[in-house]
Length: 165
Image 1 (cartoon, rainbow, N blue to C red):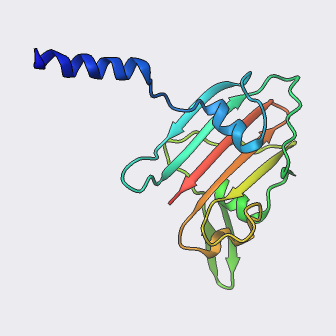
Image 2: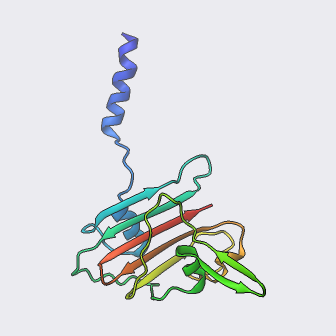
Image 3: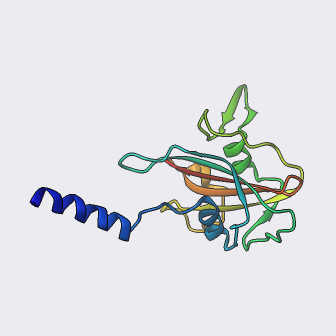
């Protein structure tokens, strides 16, 4: 009899308290303070895991064209140099040497296309951050902990990036 009580109890607990992850639309919407329930997930890559939870997330959302998505804290494109380096990588001359920064992405993650029109939203989760919307000190630390949302106004797409190292 005892052999059956534990499995039945476990089944009842699972049915009463289902454990489901937050949808990507809700996760990004919560960050932006917007309702993205009408958005469609086109691509979803996430390498977070392990003991420390480090990893890279890249989610591509198709937003309905009639959406008025203008979150507080957004900035019009183009990206500042430090975010340009994080997303696409930059190479420049430093004296006689060539210096390259970024991109900070996993090889298996979706590539982010360059955008002509749109906006970006940045949030720095790093414990040394004094202004979470300031990307200036991004490359001055030994680790990265930030979220970035890029809006391609021409394609009605959002690109959500989360990097934790």
